[in-house]
Structures are given as structure tokens and as C-alpha cells.
Length: 237
Image 1 (tube, rainbow, N blue to C red):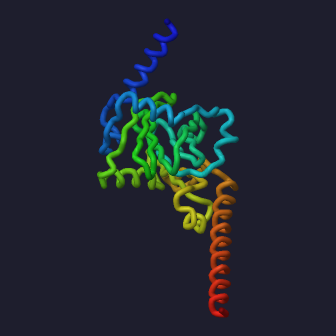
Image 2 (cartoon, one colour; image 1 turned 45 degrees about the horizontal axis):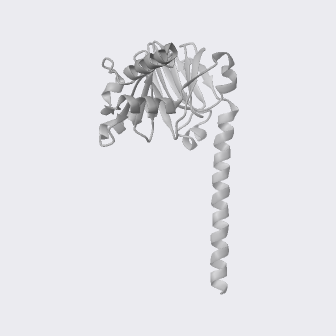
Image 3 (cartoon, rainbow, N blue to C red; image 1 turned 30 degrees about the horizontal axis):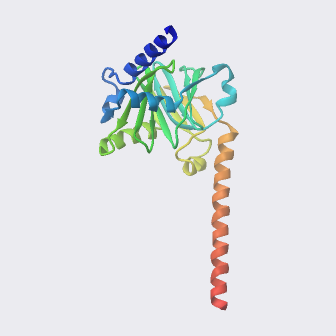
């Protein structure tokens, strides 16, 4: 009986957090609708947000950056392969998170909490740095401003914080052109123009980009060969 009561109290606490509304924040700039308590809990459970061991960050912090944000609380990196890394302003990993989400996504500070949102979907999650749920909302798909806000957050490549500029980029201008939605490095530039490397996905990102380029040209070449062969057959028949 006591066990069931504890489970019930925990469920009520999570539900109240998921459907509560915090003070004015970036998330409040979106036009959105809250879910019912039961639906919010179901969606949150499907996200399956899990902590990643910061002491083993070298093993999982090897993927490209999809989006980032900077505040006094630290640096948030939305990484490929459904991961988020939380760093202090010196680049030390504080903690990381894994989650289940289809497609591309972005992460952003919301006060002292983190928001996670889909790039092409309509779900927005807010949680504490301890991976505790705050709320789940559905973005209004009929609002053009919502899409503009989301694109601004995900598409931001440079953030000024204090006397420093934080920037995500690739190792070469060519890769920057070919890979416009994922980046291998986060750098910090101080007020006198000195650049410091904060995060580097290293060779993995470059290899992935080059592999994608080669695969594209290989497929295009095969299609071209098929078209040429087909035309020659038509001409000879």
C-alpha cells in the first residue's frame, strides 16, 4: 500500500511540473498549447531523457554540433545522435543527456532550465539541468512567428556573451558550405581577437561530411550512366 502511495505521489508531482507555467522566458515567446496531464506524461516518458556520465565524455562527445546556446549558467550543445552536452564557460563537461527524438532538433537555455525542440516537429520540452521535467507544450503550427523563432534559435551560429564571442564552425570554408546544418567546432573569441577552441568533434565530422559528398557523387554518377545507357538503347532500337 505504501509503495503504491509513493508511486502515486511521484506521478502527481511530475504531472504538476509538466503542466505548470514558469515566469516569462524564451519559451513563452512561442505560441503554444499545453497538453493534458496524462498526455504530457506520456510524451515525456517517450522522450526517455537520460543522464550521460560526464567522466566518460570523451567517448560520447565526438559528434557534430547542431545548435548551441550560451549564458552565465554555461554552454549548451545540441549534438548529433540525440545527445545534449552541458559545459561550463571554460569548456569543462558538467553533464550530458541522451533522448529519443526523430529528425533534427535544437537546445537552448530557458533561464536556468534547458528547452529541447524539434526542427520540423511541434513539440517543445523544458527540463532542469538535473533532467527533471518542467513542462511539455505543443507549438502552434499556424503561427509564422513560431517558425521564425525556432529558425533563429537553431540557426544561430554566433553568440556574444560578456566580452567574448562564441561561434560554431567547421575546419574549412569548403566544409562550411557543404555542411550548413552541422559543425565540428565551438570556439571562443576574446575582445582582442584571440580564438580558443572549446569543443572539437575532430576527424569524425570531417569523415562523415566527405563520406556523404562521395556517396552523393557516386549515386549521381550511377544515375547518369543509367540515363546514358537507356538513351543509347532507345536510339538503337
